[in-house]
Length: 386
Ligand code: SF4
Image (cartoon, rainbow, N blue to C red):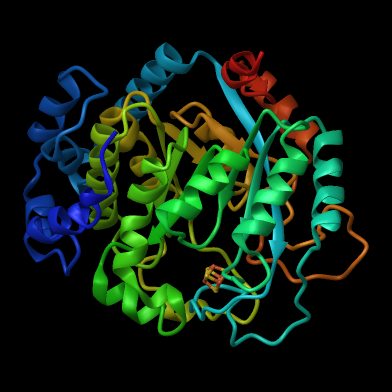
């Protein structure tokens, strides 16, 4: 297990490769990729990573080969994961936030009626989620450090761990010791989005609050993987910057984590910007098309055979139905993105608008009709608890 002296190492790698900046040399390299380069890459055995492979697959030239990429990604995913898609549900515990991310409805600058759940209220929401059949729960919190403390999360996890086979979290960055405490309390996975790997773009979209610290965020996956988390998730918020550059940096990050923390399962998520309370879309120059989202998903699958690929209800029904045939392994269903949203007895503002509003049962039916088995339970984990 790598030790804490590795902290900051990925920052060095990213800086040396110039993947944390404007990406001038990479833009040029991407634009030089030819159809022949893509064909050569696609003729190699699929599923392993090097930067030349991801560079070819994420290039504009590769857009002509999306069908071939999709077929290879599907075959590889079925080989590694079978025809299964795991289902999970997010539980939002607070909409108070110390940060002012320009793309988010929970920004501290927005005026709306906020809510945070007591542990009893959060447990009641979790009961509703469990009654829908889910045993894979994702605890989600904005940066509300005074109320959603490590003690709060540990107590909630201890209350819920008998009801769910897997509990994971999407929360603000913590120290290595704090991540260890979460793990001991029953939280076995953490996902944290760098949002963008470009330092300048990062500063523009995160002007204030603790989240303005790019380096601390960049190092957090190293800390939670080092704390023993079984599931280690990363991603970029798609729409803030050129998705091709973000994919290169994200792939390097995944490769770095996979080499050091081979006992954990790495996963990539693909959150695209969504409309949100009081957020103007004018400021986003890099809105990602559905076609480029498909390219990114398949390119990462063809470089990371065993990585989990996660797609949430941010995306609409059509793209999610197609994505299950491209390499996605895990999906949320029936999500509510506001605290208290499942009990539904309060008008509440969500973090962003969800697109796929189908119920969990409808998602399960869709998966079956596409020839996939919806998996509500992490069987591997469940059996290891016996
Ligand atoms: S993205 Fe997260 S940290 Fe930023 S304002 Fe929204 S909830 Fe807060």
